[in-house]
Image (cartoon, rainbow, N blue to C red; front, side):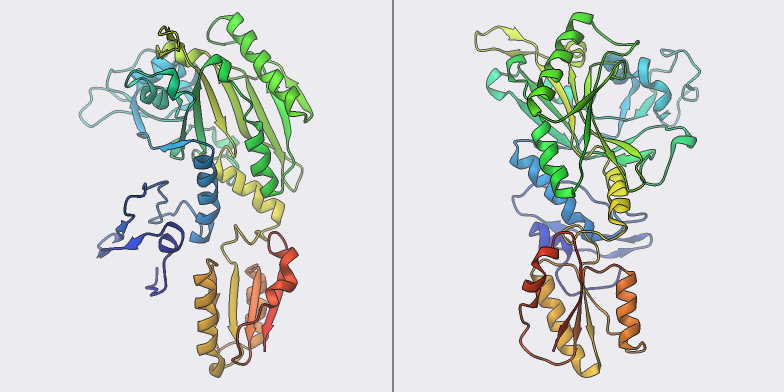
Length: 419
């Protein structure tokens, strides 16, 4: 990463103050001061970045801001948990083959293999979390709760790990480590509401149509059939009130509850299951979750598992194919490039670049005068910049972008010449 005296993405988007950041033998780091603001989602840009370009951070920040607007508290939970937690939640019995397990140094025996009996493992075996719901149940249970706190909404954007079969892996659409906009709502039974409007608002911005499916009780389900019937009726009623067409997918629910799955199709017509809404009466029961109701009697909450994007990597993969690599301006890592015609225009081109960066755009400067103007223009076209500014003389920067307003969100105005 080259030194850049211009404001960093963290400074522009988060209002952070850049502090100490020396280089080390293994790389570099920077401290940021956020004042009284929360730290928010961690984006690790060192050694194999989770994001290909820092220009993509803005899109994720928009999503986290929407979660905050809807009353969700962003939390961060550990990556490793004892398998005792997964036994309590039921995942060890039903999901063990899809989990990565390990033991701390000095343990007596290796971690159990998927072929072992579900409960035959040393007591100190640890497992990488494949989902956040058991950790969020612990957070709900760590102190007494009142009906006045409900619904309690928790959102977690941490990395998840699942031992997917090698044959099922594919590009960004299915990974063993991925990030999910994983959220859980703890509510009273009479507070159960449809979360489908959130899906519609986000997918409309991304330009996706979607198909909904109600997945019902599988063969190896947890709990009593009467609770399942109640949960399925609630989700079916939510789908009917939503007004969009939906399909019935019998027997494909999670082992702890029925769910509404959201399916998208990429540019090749392949379906991808992305967002999901799951109604769960089982985990609150297994974790003994309670709250004091209005009558002063302890009652049990209902848990709603909810993700809008699902896997962020999968959504980016589907979006990349749908856009043909031409990202919308608000999400694009290559928004604007300024190309000076000659050396006499370079100073003014840098001024244009700085003004566009100050406006919050990702703006690059191509002042490689070893190439002709046409070669640099062609290079910018191959990189899929949303806008090219060709600078030939120094004049006040005019609002020629106004002519391209319809293209700002999704289209392209390939070249804008500043004369």
